[in-house]
Length: 111
Length: 113
Image 1: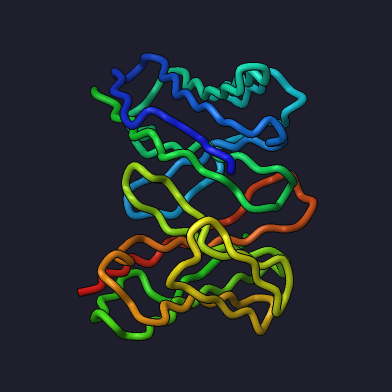
Image 2 (image 1 turned 180 degrees about the vertical axis):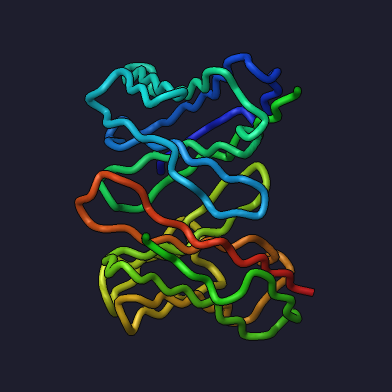
């Protein structure tokens, strides 16, 4: 089945850029998502990209997709302490369908 | 505002008990999902449902069952709770054919002792 991998931990200084990476195995994954989970909370969608796109920018967030390498990244510009959370990469073959998640990357923002 | 509500935030149950986790959504979504979240493993799909009275196994269905008698409600059942089912359980719902997200509940942290 589908496998989605992420690094476990990222430490970054406030004001710097953060880059979270994700790889997936199934080339038929059509919708690719980034979710954020703050302590004690459920998951909140940050952004998503379709497999026919290379890049999507949304305010401080930039998503890059390398479909050939099955590599997805999320860049957060000007990282703030409020960005400290767990970030999950998730993929789906159809809109609204079941998601396959990576293990999550815990981002710690240091002042 | 879409709301997915899970009946309990925290539960402590004894080994062998039958456990019910309830999830209700208020936006008439066709699709509902149960995931469990464990550190380093992310979220893993237990069961899902694309319609009332319909259910499909996810990646880790063993030891679980589900019920969907009404469109807005999706219940996860642990037939005989075991300590390895201690976890965070997350319910989600979504619309078919929409490109945006699945909406998640706040989660139920279940401890089996």
